[in-house]
Length: 149
Image (cartoon, rainbow, N blue to C red; front, side):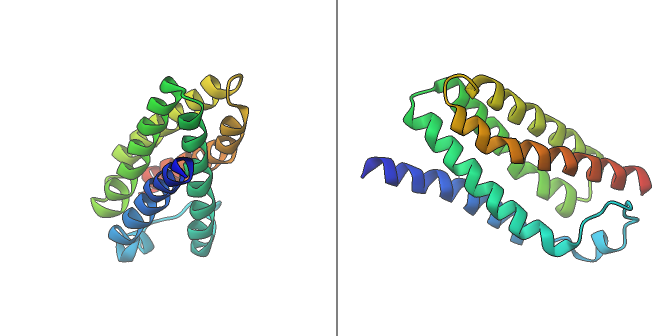
């Protein structure tokens, strides 16, 4: 029972935190008025993509907690902190370059998590692979928006 309670907590942090940041910092008119790169995906894609990723993030955090892996758990917390800082910087305060720096830090933390869990907790590492790909793409998008505006 304790395992499921902790899993629920990890999912609440990832899904709940992501949801809260999303509704607290909507794209709005500022974002709609920006010059967008040619590879900008449709807006409807972001919510389902992030929902799936937040579930993967929550499960990965739970797996390293359950395995008693302290370093990966710390890295998980760091990437989550970066993740939750990005939306307020980009959408709330319109600081695209600062948000890009946070996103780079997030990607480095994600890659570090994958590296330290690859041998000891491979399922957690695999859960982070799509997250790394998406955040890499988001970095290109963020950088292009900053550059174009």
